[in-house]
Length: 286
Ligand SMILES: C[S@@+](CC[C@H](N)C(=O)[O-])C[C@H]1O[C@@H](n2cnc3c(N)ncnc32)[C@H](O)[C@@H]1O
Image (cartoon, rainbow, N blue to C red; front, side, top):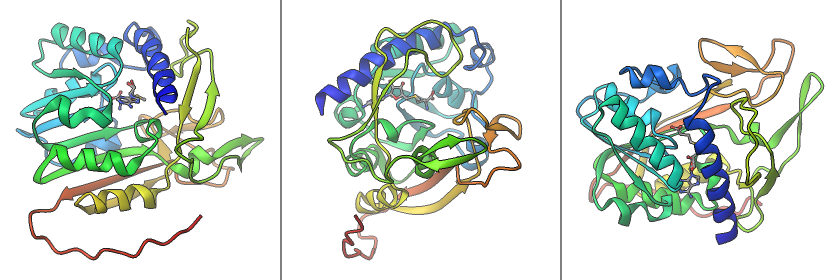
């Protein structure tokens, strides 16, 4: 598993360098440095009250959403990412923005030891759990980072979308609904997703598709209760080349294509001591 993690680290280090010097406008750097917010309408409308809250942003990349959360009134914000170059860029942006957000370099699975404290909100969005081979382990990290009564906000690409490829004016199913930990989807792409023409030195990377039921059951097993689970017919990046603008800042499928859910979002709260819950029998659905 180490090799997949290392390959992803090299790939993300390359991307971090390109994204931190982004000229395509994808990362809306200037607006964040000027005190604005990079959050999309979807997560802004769902994340709930963040004012005065202590937030940890997992897989924060170059820190622009992290700084945005502080700009929006969070009490304190910490960003965590395993890419050294992403963390250097994030700290540089924070200094330029005059922001007191903290950035910590660590793999997600070592976040509890690296951060050594708890939070009101764990914030995870857009392209995070697909980089992890074990969502049950991830959910335990999330739970351990939360105070009792603290909550997770997660917004992610939908597993059904990740299963599909474009075929003409429609979609075809290309990948299994669940990726085994030891056999990730293997990719090789020379360019990053922003439209930047600079080539990645380490083009190989590995991803996992996790069924929503795994994510939900992982959170429940880790001691969280669901506040909401939403599915959306749009996502924050142009996942398919024929996707069209949907609303102000998202992409959906064209009018004449059958629609699928493109994203999902979860709000979940860490249960207090002694809270009752039903433990379901494990159903093997392979
Ligand atoms: C698509 S970006 C997430 C975008 C992010 N939500 C933001 O605010 O811009 C994915 C990030 O996950 C990080 N990442 C991938 N695997 C990781 C791991 N095992 N531990 C920590 N960070 C990881 C990458 O370095 C990258 O910055």
